[in-house]
Length: 385
Image (tube, rainbow, N blue to C red; front, top):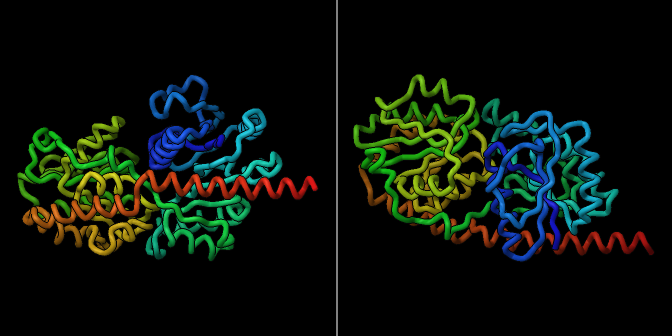
């Protein structure tokens, strides 16, 4: 099957990882994949996808981790590319772009079935301005998503929300994020020796308001974790400079910045005793699943589907409110009870193996693709008759 994948290759975010992992897995299963993404012609982004994956660049005016604004001719160029490629199916890993709203009409005119993965994070309840803003994103997109052949979300919570907003139940399909558990696995790591840590706690992700990292930093400082514990912050974002001014090595906090090297990130996760995700809103965090697969004990808020992932003893679930206060109590327990940390690390990896593997994710996608292509063929035949 030939899949035209419309997604992101930069800047780095969960959507980029999702597209890379899924398309590479599809290629390994002998599907043909053409990756369409927003990039200027001289933009060098080598190494993020298999060399077997053909690419088509679409021009843009602005691109960030959250939003993409295409150029005025990108829609025309997309139509031309799809006419030339004649794929069996278009899979749009939605980039929060105005072009997302034109895709149903474009694909319908070309007779190509259209599948979307809808990534925006959310909270179970509207408990803050951030979570309220994310709900508005769902409200804005729902009328458009109703015209896609299928919309993939990561949890029943997201599915229920879109259905309440008017998307047909038959359109919304839950296929959770998946991790390559052979690549992301427990193993040797020198990161503790490098950071001079007896106990290593890790946050990995964007440094932005919705990630609530300052609450983690306050909780860490208030917990007085001592000279042998370290908190490593992996990632970058708009709050990085301001947070570094107030939290540093005197608190046992080490700023590692953005790390592009996947093997280096895996080494850090393998060396972590505890992974912490204090987000106010989430979808289903790939960083959390990667840490679980590497055998780290995990603490996360119940934003999005993350609480669902850690339910029934696979990790510690926090309320999104008063994260600092909760961490002030919980962090010393992990520091002082290594047997609990090890037990939760084993349970975390087992949960990923049972429910969140990349292999299972791609198998579900293949079944969905076949269904959608078959339905589209029937529609085209009926029109011809």
